[in-house]
Amino acid sequence: MMRWIERAFWGAGIALLVVYGAIRVDGEVGRQRGLIAFQSAHATTAAGEVDVAKYEDVPAPDQSLWNAKRVKDYEASLRSDMAPPRGVLEIPDLNLEVPIYAGTTELVLNRGVGLVDGTARLNKGGNTALSSHRDGYFRVLKDIEKGDAVIVDSPRGKMTYRVSETFVLDKMDDSVLDPTPEPTVTLVTCYPFYFVGNAPKRFIVRAVLEKNPEAEQTTDLAQSAPNAVAEN
Image 1 (cartoon, rainbow, N blue to C red):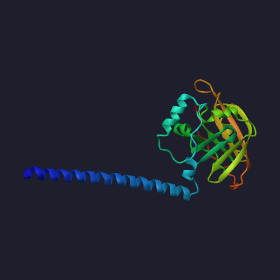
Image 2 (image 1 turned 120 degrees about the vertical axis):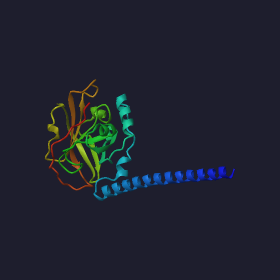
Image 3 (image 1 turned 60 degrees about the vertical axis):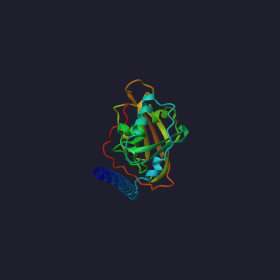
Image 4 (image 1 turned 180 degrees about the horizontal axis):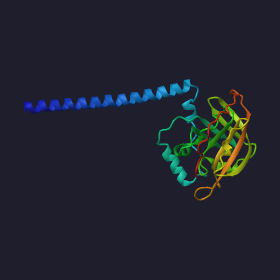
C-alpha cells in the first residue's frame, strides 16, 4: 500500500514538472515572439518607415463587385503573416481605401495593393506604380474619372494626386513604369475588367500630384528596372 502511495506521489510530481516545463517553454516562445515583434516595430518606426498600427487599421473592403474566387483568396490571405503595409491608398469617389504593401506577390495582391518593385517610393517623387487585381480591389477603377482624387498616406505625409488620364495598353508594354518628370501615381490592373481567363490588356490610371501640405517635396527618380505587376 505504501509503495503504491509513493508511486502515486512520484507520478503526480513528474506530471507537475511536465506541466511547469510546458508553461515555461510556451512562455519563452511567446516572450521571444513579443521581443521580435517589438524590436521589428521599433526599428521600423525609428527608421521612419511605417507606423504599423496606423496602416493596418483599414476598414474591411467592400467586396460587392469582387469575383467569388477573389473573395476566398482575400480571406485565405488573412491567415498568412505579412510584412507591415507601407501606406494606404484612398480614392474617395470610388469608396476605396486599401493598404499598400511592398512587391506584387500573389499574397500581396490578394491582401491589398502592391508597390511595384523598381518604381518610386510612396510620396517621394517620380513615378510610383501600384498594382492590384481587376476582380478584387481594383475593379472599381472601371468607374474612375479624370479629376478624381487619388490619396496616398505614407510616413512622408498624406498627398493628393489628381487623375490626369486613363488608357489601355497591351499587357507586355511596361513603359508606364518608366520614371516621370513630375510626382505621379500610376495604377495598373488587368483589362477588360470582366474578361474570362487571363486578360490580354492593362488598364492604366495616371494621377499627378496636386499638393503635398504635410510632406517634403523631394524627387527620387533613381529607379531600378521595374518588376512584375498583377496578372489576371
